[in-house]
Image 1 (spheres, rainbow, N blue to C red):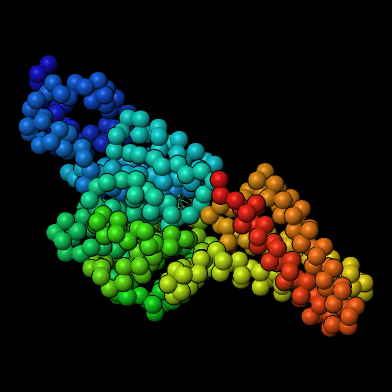
Image 2 (cartoon, rainbow, N blue to C red; image 1 turned 60 degrees about the vertical axis):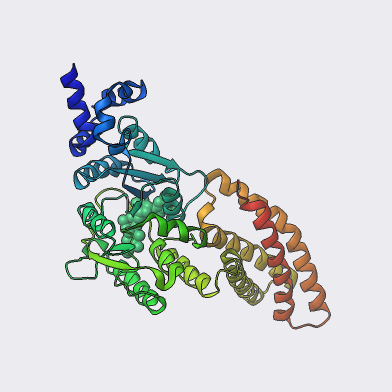
Length: 417
Ligand code: GDD
Ligand code: MN
């Protein structure tokens, strides 16, 4: 019995890799039970041997993994982390935005037998950057790693990254595809390469520190630096690394390590063209010093597009021979639908409405904006009858409608829960 205890102790304190492998297969229930039932207190030698209580179990590194529809990748990632980080006490925090494929349930299934695995399930939200921030804030290890949950990032680099930070050679270590030894072949299509490269150019123009791969989603940093920056992060969109670096300014000591960006095997990429729009938003927000809320900027831009859509529809409807009032009504409806769609895709991307909520949101939007539309048509018609040019009359009506729509959107349609 005493021998068994001693063996178990050694497992707990030293041989984490092996324990990790067992954990993934669910073998750890026994060790877990002992901890919960308080058996550990009885084993004095662990307390003296490992320092303070279960010192070995206190993570030095929190690996934060944002995930959305990555169910198949969760178990393989945990297994790979266990191998790559053997010898370093670590934990992984999966931050899942309530994926329909059951990613969170899968993470919890593994967490049930492996205390190094945690899951943060966010409901009614989307967003890579905010997921990373909240996952990091939910943990306490002195070092934080951020990596994708789709196995595209090379976890074997983690130990080297940790060594750089632990030796205090840098505050932030970035896995880069663009330093010698790195490789971006996993990006796939030429279009993705182009998207990535243009983004990198744009970013390098404004970066306070040199970074060859500012779009990287694979990096590690000291917690104290992160905690200090967290309140000032924009937290919108995809580019959490850029957000951190732009917020920190010159104060951050950055080191890049080459990494190979692997091909995705399971699941799908969530990076699309709209991400570029959000990226521009992040740069704009930093340029404006965070004074003007990003949502307002987005609202204004969508509103501008809405006016253009309105005028174009009005023009076409007039060409088609519709009476001005009818044409203005039609243009209003089309502009309203376009505004709803654009705001749902861009302005409120992080709380995008889907399914029943989308129908409800659209119904509310149309209903309340109907009031705005009546005012819109009334004003435009009035002006038109007073011999204002058709386009000026139409635009004046549209502006009234758009302002009204904004108010409704913010308060009723995309109301945060
Ligand atoms: N919680 C959460 N919420 N996670 C998300 C969301 C979200 O809204 N969107 C994406 N993710 C997760 C994915 O599940 C994945 O684990 C990770 O974030 C990266 O998303 P991918 O969709 O796989 O991105 P990618 O492979 O196209 O982009 C990668 O390469 C880019 C460089 O071109 C990422 O590493 C990016 O960070 C990187 O900038
Ligand atoms: Mn990916």
